[in-house]
Every structure is written in structure tokens, then in C-alpha cells.
Image 1 (spheres, rainbow, N blue to C red):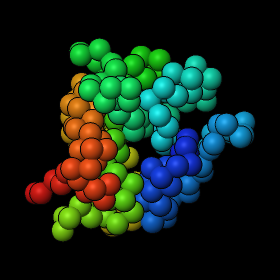
Image 2 (image 1 turned 120 degrees about the horizontal axis):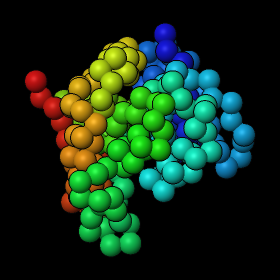
Image 3 (image 1 turned 135 degrees about the vertical axis):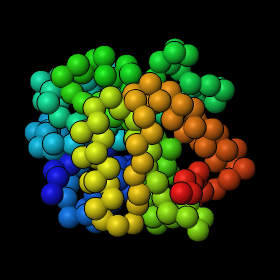
Image 4 (image 1 turned 90 degrees about the vertical axis):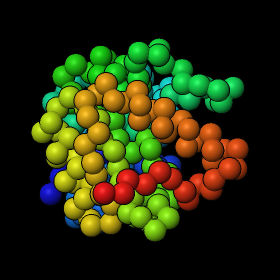
Length: 192
């Protein structure tokens, strides 16, 4: 079984933790606002707002080296809700990978809402977590940890370059929910 550390104790952090716990994995939650963490996980999930990524990377570079680090953020311009805040040829995950060269940075969970992770369903379909990254072994490890509980699937979406497209998809989903065109229990399904 894997050991998982999750930065963030909000809806997404809790839902992701429950997915891993259902698979029998050890889950540690960290709230950096209230505690000085000792990171124990082989997989570290950053279930925090995009703006917190740079702070975490700067604060814990040694602790994150050699680990699988999962970025779930969508770098949305929340002032205008009209675009992503990263350069058109980049992504939040690419920025994080540049800041943490000793870690295996993956993009995952950003195209899922907490409710679909908790229920394991998008409509009548199983929830699927899309994973992008350059480390094939890390992607496989994360996918197996996600799928171990049996309620949620995982799918390799390609290299870390695909994080840009995943962030655009996550952005589209957020805009639809925030403008009440879809509910926060909806999502995009992968039908295979």
C-alpha cells in the first residue's frame, strides 16, 4: 500500500483522501496554516489553490525531492473568470516541475469535482481521474493507488505537456458550474 500526504483539508483534499483510504492506503492531511508538517507520503498531493504552489515548492524543496508530487490546481483568473493565468505554452504543473526538479510532478484530479470523487460517478458513468506527467512509473503508481479502492478509475492522459489541456478542461468545467449551467456534482466522463 502507498503512503499519501495531502496538502489541503478542503473539499478536494478530503475527497481525494477518501479515494486513497478506500484503497487501504495510509493518508496524512496537512494544513500548512496551522502546522509545521513532516511529510511522510511517497505520493504528495497538493490540494491547494494555484497561488500556494510556489510557496510550497520554495518551502519544502528537499522534502519533496524523490517523491511523486501531484498538482490538482486550475490556474484560473478568478477576478475575470475569463482565462488561465499561466503562459499559453505552459501550465501550473509545468511551473511546479521547474520549481521541483527532483520530484516526479504529475497533473491529476483537476478535471474532477469533489462530489464526483466521493460518489465515484459522473452521471451514470464511473469517475475517471486523468493523469499527465513525464514519469511513466510515477503515473502508474498514482493510477494504481487511485483505482485500488474500486470506485474511481484513472487514465494516463499523456506527457506533462498535456497538463495545459487538462487545465483548460478543468477551467471550462469550473466556469460552467460557477455560472450555474451545470451543478457541482456534474463533470466530464470518460466512456471506454
